[in-house]
Amino acid sequence: MKNLWITFSLLVFCFSSCKKDINTETQNIKVTDSVTTEEPVTEPPLDSAAQMKAWVAYATPGSPHKMMADETGIWNCEMTFWMEPNGKPEKATSTATIKMILGGRYQEANYSGTMMGQPFEGKSTLAYNNASKEYTTTFIDNMGTGILTATGKYDEKTKSIAFKGDMVNPLNGKKTPYREIYTIVDATTRKMEMFDVKNGKEYKSMEIVMKKK
Image (cartoon, rainbow, N blue to C red; front, side, top):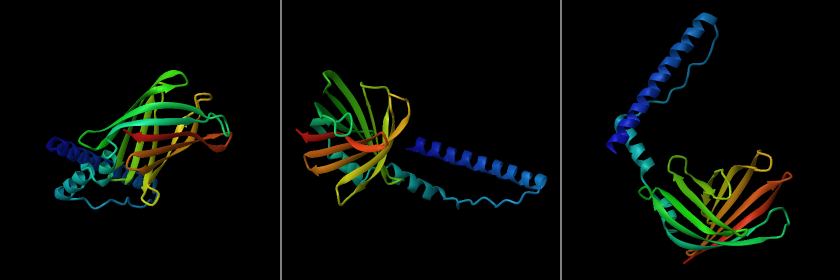
């Protein structure tokens, strides 16, 4: 933690120095070109104790991380896919092994199973950012070469996280939005629903019901 604090202090120092250089250049431009600009708004500096307190709060796992840790274990996953709106559903199964990593700060899930007659492997991570108060999820698998990334916030009333992100369509190379709803059904059941956009319309493209062993 000491080395981390030293690194953070150096970053703060470098950032402050850069701001001074930028302010000097701005003043020179004012004199030369006689252009009136507003003075930059600077935040009041924090003393070292306040900086340390903020950094410790940022790095310390809290109740959201405890909620993520409750999912540690092995889960059976029943997956349903739709290739297009109102299309014929396709079924697949997999097993997810979930654990917490890096001192209980992040959740990692490893998936294995069969999809479309082919061996399937996938890996996801889940993080809760104490500073932004939001969750971030990532997913990679052996069915492609991209990374899915989305962010969202937890709704206590629905016991769910509504994620939003972008994915690249492999058919045309263009980004398209998608969203995901992750619901805590009960202590041993989770449901993940994914919605894609096709021809300008959103449709449900995947549903995974997870049961803890």
